[in-house]
Structure formats: C-alpha cells, structure tokens
Image (cartoon, one colour):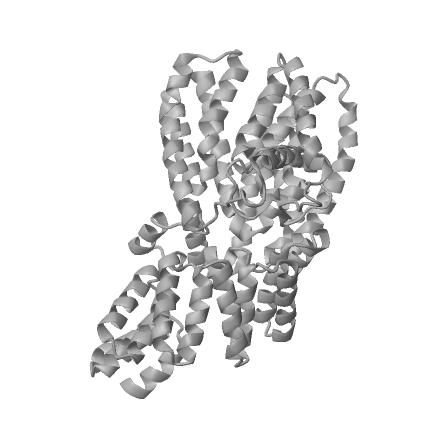
Length: 577
C-alpha cells in the first residue's frame, strides 16, 4: 500500500467519524452507570498510588476494568468532570479501532477498496452508537483496541515467526483483559485463525496457547466474583425453564446478524420476552430451526475457510453474552456486537469478493448513507437520561426500569411531581420492582410523609433486600430519632455493599448516641473507601470538636471545605478563625 493512499483511507475514516459523532461530543453524563463509573468514582479524582491501588483492587458495576478506569482518571486530571472530554476519548478509540479493522480486513480480503467499504460499515453502523456515545461503554472500545492490536501482532508472528511479535501479542492480550474481561475469548480466536491458515489444528500451536488460556481462566474467575458481588448473575429458573432458555440463546445468536442487516427498532434496553398464555413469542421457537439451517449451509461451505473464519470469530466473540450464564436484566444489547461485527464483515467480504465485477461497489454508498443517517440520529438519544429512556419506552413500553430512571432524572431537575408519576408508572408496569418503591419512598420522605415512606422502604426490602433500600430506611429512622433501628439498617446496607455514605451516616448516628470510638472507626472506613469524600472529614471535625481537640477539628474542617463540603466552610469560619 502506498503511503499517500494509506493517508487518504485513514483521513477519510477520521473525518467521517468526527462528523457522524459530533452531536454526542456535548452529551451529558447519564445515570446509566456514568455516575458510578465517573462522576461519583473517588478513585479517578487523582492519580496517586492510593487511587491506582484502589482502581486495581476494585470492581465497578460488577466489572474488573482497571485500564479503562485509569483512562477515566487521566481524562479527569486533564479536564475535570467535563463530559465532552470523556466523549472525545471514546471517539478517539473508535477511530483507532476502525483503522485496525481496515488493516485486518485488508489482510484477509486482499482488496483495499472492498476492505475500506466494509470498514466504513464498521464505522457508521447504528449499532455502534451505544459503544461510542455512552461514556460507560469506554471499556468496550478499549478492550477491543487491545484485542485487535494483539490479533494483528499474532498475524505478524504467523508470517515472520518472531518471538517478539508473540510476546507483544501476549502483552496486548493482558491489557485487553485488564480493560474488560470479555477479552478472555482471545486464545480461542487465535486457534480459529490457526485453523483458517493451515486448515487443521497442530498440537504445537495449541500448546503455545497455554499461557493465554491461563490468563483467560484467571480473569474469568475474577469476573464471576465481580458479577456475584454486584448481584449481576441472574436466576432465571423461576421464570424460564432450561427448555425455554434454549430458545432464548438461539434468538440471541440470530438477533445480532439480523440487526446488522436491518438495524431498525434499536434500543438502549432489550428486555427479556414475556410469556403469553404460557408461551414465548413465535420468533423464539423458530430460532433453533433457522440456526440448524444455517449450520447445514455452513457445513456445506466448510471448504471456504474465510467464510468459516468470519462465522467462528462472530460466535467466539459473542459467546460470553448469549446468556448461557444469565446476568443483568437484558437479553441483548447493541454494544455486544462491536467486536463480533468484524467476523460478520469478514463473512460478508468472503461472499462479495467472489464477484468478478466490482462496479457494484458504488451501490454500497446507499446503505452506507442510510446507516450514517440512522447513527447520526441515534447519537442524539444519548444526550441525557430523559431522551435515552423515552426512546426505550417508544420501542419497549413495558420496561419498568425506563420509568424508574426517568423518575430519577426528574428528581435531578427538581420536578418532584413528575418523578412521583414516573415511579408510580414503574410500579404499575412491574409491581415487584424494589428500586421504584425505594425511590418513591425517598419522595415521600422529602415531603415529610414518613408513614408512606416507611411502607415503600419496607416493601422494597421485602422484595429485594439490597443496600439502597436499607440505607434509605435507615435515613428515615434517623430522622425519626429511632437511632438503634437506624444503626441496624445502616449495618445491613454496609454488609451488602460497603459505601462511604453508609459509613458516614452511621458514624453520625453513633455521634448522636455518644459512641465516639465506633463513629471514629466508621469515618476511617469511609475515608479508606473514598479518600476525597468531604462529608467524612466534616464529621471528623465535629467529632474532634466534641472532644475539645480544636487543632484536629480545624484541620478536618479545612480538608472538608477544600473537598467541596458546603457545611465545612461555615464550621471552619465559626470555630477556627
């Protein structure tokens, strides 16, 4: 490839990406994990040893992703909590991934024009918008970058047999796993490539993958632990039998290639299907039949190694999210197609390159324009939580989480009446939705209606004894001066999910009960969890002030004030000047 032509390809990719995702650059943070991963994440607020150690020893929304979190920390160090900077980092990684996809496609297809057009499909496809426009999906982009780069290094190794290329591949693979655990399938993808290249499996090449599999097993164990800790592993046995789950998995396999070809009715949330008179929708029962038919066609075409490799890449990289082990409350998501899409493009390329006349390539401009238009439109739904969850309701009006999240967004806008209506709708759609009861209980508490608040908190805990519900009920007990009961609920909340605010609120309750040593211990734990949590230092100042330690109290008040705790400024002015 000539240097000037390569610049043209890469420049075109970059320019199209910038134009396409320009609307998302100014989008806000959303409450769909962005606040947990970025806005309220204490570990990204500095790049000192303590924060980095916290990043490498913590899970975020059930995922172990230290490299991604460090990128959040670097972005925060450069621009603070400016969402534009975080969106720009996502766009940068998407462009880099497109460059890698172009190089890889050209390796397999040996046709620059065809590879470039298929790369543009990867760039502009509407299902990619979720990965690029959602700040919390950065891990998807970052792990894919290292995954694709590691694969490219392995291709180089297969050509030149240089140990340095294999070591580079191994190092990039580890970085991919540290970005997102979905990278654990990488060694299986390498085996698929070995089969593509030589047409059979060799023991020497299989034994070569042992270190890769060892890393995969390690990160697999870490991931299962993280998912269990975050309660992301779902128990579907009460709703779906093993027989039903065969159809769920079959449907998930077909969902992605169908949406790839016909990207309509896309959503940020795809709920599990509902039973109608004890049966699933018809399409679910047809899915295994279609899969068997496609399997037969693949077997008949098994000598076409390129087509076979494309199918294998897709299945290998999508396998972990097909709900064999159910987690979360969505059956499918757009972002899961990001890396597997390369396999579908190889498959499509293997079919198209059979055509001798490439004049048809000009007709590909039309679907590219359609995809670009749809993607440009979808970037707008990630502007804020209101647009995001209203778009979900348009396609899936029975998603209770959408109403609940709209209620939370309305609360942020101080629209309590609107929030109350949304929480009621969430409960109406799903009467056993614990989060909605807990959130509505907070509204009742703010309105001074303790009776209704306690009913909702009790209901939430009855349905799902989770940390937030206990925390909220503890706050209400504290307000009612039922301090012993408040302590019990704070303790239950901490057992389920240790958080800095739970420790500080329990410490404040201990202060009311004159249990100084217990309060001090809780404040110490709060600061360990969140070194920059101003309220912990403010309460430490109150504790020291009550003990007559003015110097220590003033130091704590000053620290809290510097961390943005509003009450600390007044306390410091009154007691220390």
